[in-house]
Image (tube, rainbow, N blue to C red; front, top):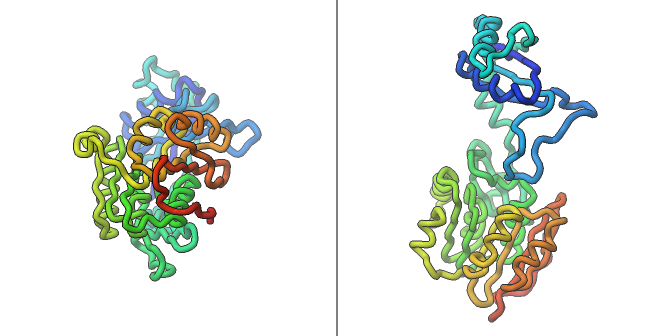
Length: 315
């Protein structure tokens, strides 16, 4: 079966309403692109990753609706225009058509995800691939809704920190666990007890599935359940790969979860934000940049008390 993409260029204030109306009129899917993509006028929509943008479209937006080849495209556009509030003048909506050939979409999607080598001896491998080095620390992890496949610099930095400070026999808390990838690394590196916390219930479900797939016993919680189940539990290592703003707000809680001599690892921090994050944690412990990659940093510090291990050099 083949499909057609209906491509309509509209101003910012019409993009969201038209997208919703196209879906209501029968489009199979709708996406919004920058009409100036690939030109000098291209504008980035998002600022800091993970933060809600002020707008959900561009000044010149391209709304792309997918429909079956046999669809009456003019009728679909006209119906969508009428469904908008206020209705759009269909005579003012110029559109073009793009043919989309039938493909093996599963195979195409899988081809876009290859095994990822991280640090010295870690491989993140999709389930449809063989591990390049079966003797390495191998994580079987398929791309999904939850953040964390090892491709982002912040995730890599945290994984490399854990590899450089193997938590053998220790307890580890992964706060903001996403897919559970950092919890999985900690467990496979010999951690005795590992817990993961995330505000997203879908992330918790994905993390549990990934732990089962990798034969790792890890407990996952949403924050309220974690606080109830472990009201005063401290950990040897606490890892939080989130973003600078929530990390600053969470400073008292995260530091309170690190036992004496324990280590705190933070990432999701742009290099220019490192000083302000360090200042937020200064009342509790001294934290500094451990390593930097592509403009992002991982920071670490030790809670006063008996030191767990010596500093390691970044990979």
